[in-house]
Length: 310
Image (tube, rainbow, N blue to C red; front, side):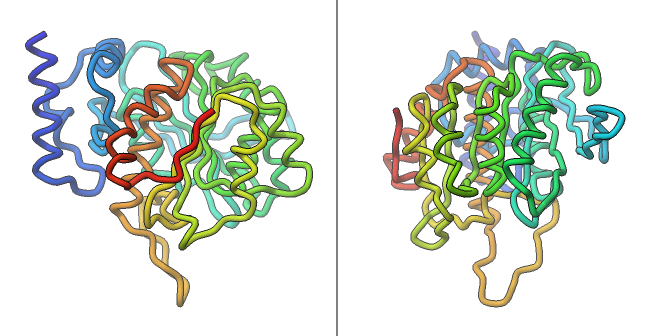
């Protein structure tokens, strides 16, 4: 009990002193011995998304350009981030959007792994076709579910979470609709990919969290259809002042096109903290309720808005 109280106090002291880019102080100052200990601590304290702004307590082994061989003819390039605990742990698979790459989600994947969730940032054709990418993702998840050792023997195949940005969010939804054996999905400011999208969305029977940008500044094609057509188990929030690009988190800031709003580090950190809370919630509780509770102060303060849940 004393150890947990000290851990909580140190984490919040670091928050109060101000956070740098994915800060490494705070909860890392007193490491939980196991993933189970961290899970128990988080589930038995007030859920707050701001805690996940901090770098998590676990070391991470990074393997760039890890090749997944789904068959003799189909291979997928991915960057793998393995969390240190010896126990079986969730796997979060992240898919980029249009004209983007796995590198655009590098910090998100790394951050998730510090919180005890192995992460895989995958590279699929960056100009689609996105229905095809969704079906490829479903095949990949099925393959990992059957043979987790192709990544690591510590993968908990019952706790695979899919994350996608923009058209990659549509691909994640399609993978879930096609029966990918995942525990749920997280859509980062998703965009629809055509007239068949509602039919896919109606088939989804896994919990989904949608984390949107601020549509006043950064509208995305058909984002509203995801909440409209997924029948149940979906929650949605928007992050005030965030752009579509803020839902990514590259290791190096991308050069900005003239006349566009640059993604801001603060809003990128807000997205990654919300993503981490949602992934933890889906992996360890099987629904979005923990994450939803963790958003309560941000919703009250107006940082998260356009709040929907069914």
